[in-house]
Image (cartoon, rainbow, N blue to C red; front, side, top):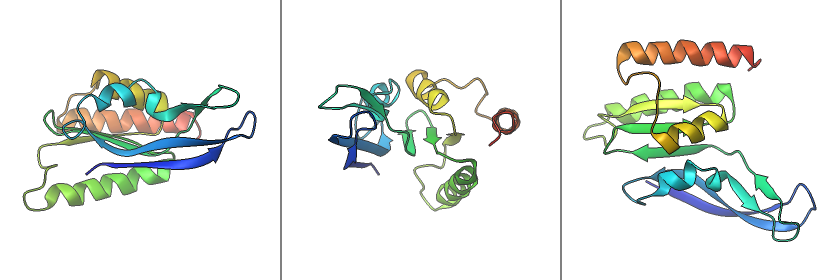
Amino acid sequence: MENIITRTVRCPACGAKMEITLYNVVNEQERAGVGRLVGSYQAHTSPCPKCKIGVVTPYPTFYEDLDKGILFAYVTSKEKVTKVRENFKKAKMQENSVYANCKLRVFTNLDNFVFAVSEHYDAYYFNEEGYKQFERYMRALDESLGL
């Protein structure tokens, strides 16, 4: 289920009010081509109408491509990773779940998330061993960044 909303914020460069669109949950089947939007920073960047500076707004985003069994999530803190994974496991176990055949990848780095969506790329195979390897890599990355 998609969740796309509009918010009014102030430009950090000039202070002008501007509207931004937040793509909290987007689904490739409901909105064909949305992966190109999310995977090109356009979903996380808005130009200020006054000073024309591109304002990057990192906010949680979930990208689903159920036909390919992919769910990529971008969250803004390590603490939210566990919650997203727990909620995904619960949703996956529900009867007739649309996520039954999906694998989840959670990112705390916007660049990695955008790249994954743009390419539907994952260096780790969508299997249990690949998932464990991915989790080890993400823990090591988060620790190296002090998260």
